[in-house]
Image (cartoon, rainbow, N blue to C red; front, side, top):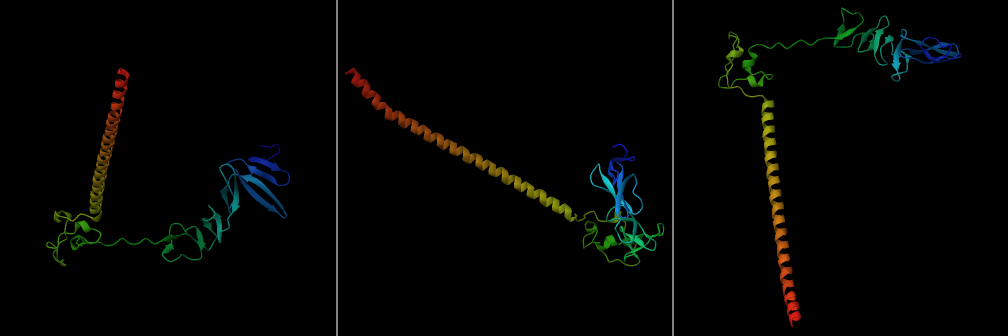
Length: 229
C-alpha cells in the first residue's frame, strides 16, 4: 500500500484516485463532470455487480439489463424496478405463458407445475405402456368391467416378460463372448502358423549344413592322399 492511499487501495494517484485494490475490495468508478475518479469498496452499491477479472483483481460494473435495479451477474437480474415482474433473471411487464405470479414472493413469476397423471390400479392389468414387464400373457387377460375389483400386485402372474433393457444387456453379453472366442481362435492360429514357419526354417538350415559338410569332405581326402604320396 502506497503512502497517502485510502484503506483497501493498493495503488493510487492524486488525480484519478485508486488504480488497483486489494482483495476482497473492488474498484468503483465515479464520474464528476469531465473528471473520473475511482475508489475501493467491499460491497458494490445498488445498480452495480461485482465482476472478477482474475483471482486478485475486480471492479464494480454497472447493471445494463432493461428494467433492472440490482444485478447479481451480467445476465441475471435479482431485483426489478417497481411495476415489473422478474422471470428467469429478466424483468417483464407480465408473466409469460406457462407461468403464474408467486404468492410468497411478490414480483416473481414461477412456472406452473404439471399435474401428475392419474394412473388407475387396473391400468397394470390392461397393459400400461410404462410397465411393459408387468403385462400378463394374452390368454390370462380379461376385460375390465366397472364392477371388477382392483387387481393387487400379489395377484399378478409369475411368468412376466422381461424389459427391453434386460434383453439388450443379454445380447450385448453374448456378442462380447463371441468376440472373445474369435480373438482366442485367431491367436491360436497365428501361434501355430509361426511355429510351422520356424520348423521349416530350421529344416532348411539343417539341409544346407549337411550339404556343406558333404561338399567339403572330398577335398580333405584328396589333400591327405597327396601328402602321403
